[in-house]
Image (cartoon, rainbow, N blue to C red; front, side, top):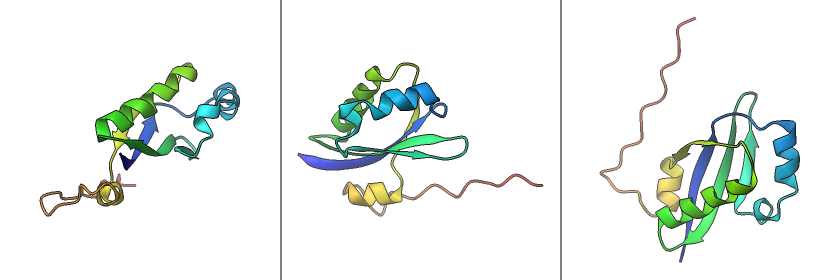
Length: 103
């Protein structure tokens, strides 16, 4: 078993009702998921033990069955997660920084 690190980006910010539900769920309070919120964003930083990355992500996604209306937009493995997951190789090149919109 390995520790896998990745980020789950939510489709929308959590509503107050969803936050109340989330804070009452034991499955989200065991240290494997950490909610990070911004003004218009929400994501979970995840660390799961599993044989494969796919198994770890599937287990994390399964937790959201208890959070009605919460949809996952994407799963991210940034350069730090690639390194932590032992997946960093010379063939892996980080994505370029996002292009900022002109004022």
